[in-house]
Amino acid sequence: MESLKDMTIGILFESKEWSTFALRDHIAAMGAPVKLFDLQEDADKAELLSCSLIVNRVFASAVFRGHQKALDQMPAVIRLLQEHNVPMINPAEAHDYETSKTRVKETLAAHGILVPKSYGIFFPAQSKDNVEIPGIEYPCILKPDCGGRTSYTYIVRDRLELIESIEGSPDIRFIAEEYIRPDKGYVTRLEVIDHVCKLALKRSVTKTGLSAYHLGSEYDFYNELPGKIEDTAVRAMDLLRIEAGSMDIIENKTGFYIIDVNSVSNASEDNTEMFKFDLMKETAAYAVKIYGNLSSNKQERALSDRS
Image 1 (tube, rainbow, N blue to C red):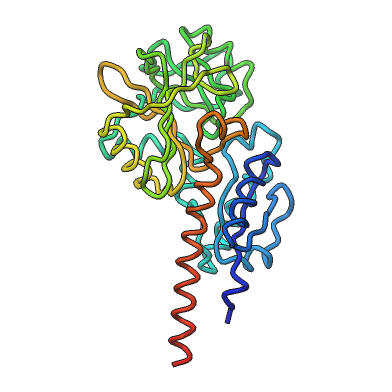
Image 2 (tube, rainbow, N blue to C red; image 1 turned 180 degrees about the vertical axis):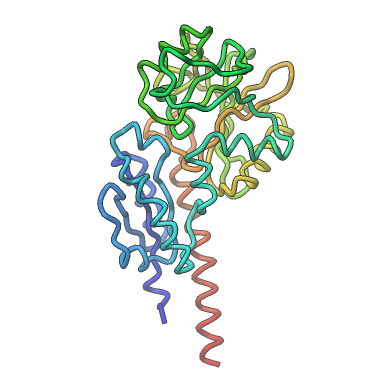
């Protein structure tokens, strides 16, 4: 029988960046044993199964940072964990949504949540110089179905721009979708952990028409976030089985639209000071809470076995 002292939290990662190690250090500081698993290396099954809880930090954007191996290993790792009843934050369903924006939109739309209209799905190699998407309207957004950090994301205003964008893009699954105009000049960024909206920000739209920290967007606190948006965000995360993640929303005259959802949320060290909010510490606290519940359950079973 596994003893309580042997219980460990494992963190799956593919990017040696500040947040990976910050999460580990916060978990350790909260008193839980923790170890890292770099999925750019071959997964060690025995080591993985020595953990009682796994935290998944493999980003959909890994494909654009030379970390495809980590994404490729995830299905086998997930199967292994499921076969041995090792829980993962976020669970397998959430990883499926992390790696397909199409699945996210279809699920949310099926439950009455506003998302951009989809125009088509295609692979650039099959479409160069001959892009025909029935019903497409311009301007539209072109982006990878599995991706993030606005990599290879374009606002295209006509068929010529669509073709030009495709020519400079990798041959992966792309989607074309409705352009939701950010009339207020910002995109709403929400961090949701454990069914609670922990942080609400306004992220400005840059001259490119896109909104992203690395593109130079500025942030402001969204203290007056409408309750209806907050409630919908939490509901959306529940539908997608995301226990700790983020989403981007655009508000305009016709309503508010969820334009992106991430089951692996990220922050840089300077974000922590800027936002007066430590996302990695909050994520660690949630992981340790789940770890504590698992520890309590094991202790109760151990006592029951002895009686």
